[in-house]
Length: 228
Image 1 (cartoon, rainbow, N blue to C red):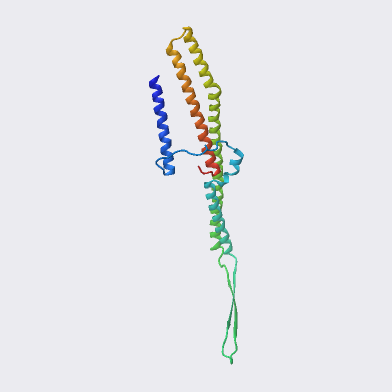
Image 2 (image 1 turned 30 degrees about the vertical axis):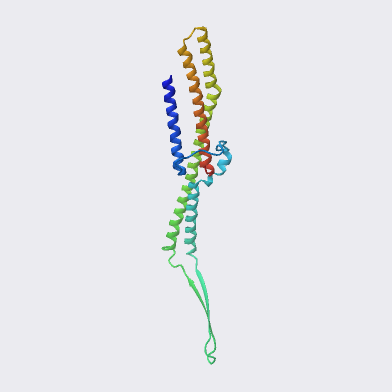
């Protein structure tokens, strides 16, 4: 039993060291420490859904769609005649009089069917592709969000089960085994194993609490734009 406890302690110490290494990687501080209040672990599904459009991946697709739409508009504008008016005033010698000239020029989009129309059609097709990619990106983000929420719900159910059932049952079993040992119906090893089971159940409860907290923090940071 001592060897099992030692193994468990070594595994937990290794997890702590790994967590500190990850934190040092993100912060750049080789001697990291955790300060301040714990992060928020309360998930508001409707609020996160309302902020889904602010995901960097979707904002990038929005920018791409806007650029494609601008290209289509530029192509359409190239088909319209471009008017330009210019005026010039010149002073000459008194015997000739001053000179005023006005000019009007018009750029006509000739051969639009062979020149502008294919370009506009190609850009319109690219715009439609960008819109479909944006729609697909939104669906992928929503699916990922719902999957993360489902996993968080599962972890929370495991936590509740450990807190309300597994730990109390382990305590009850340990008490019964020690009472039985006192009555001489079981040996000391059996009673000690029951105590070890209580410790394992309580450690498992802490692991489940950590899983729920990790899920919540990751979901909030990912889908709300909060910075850790």
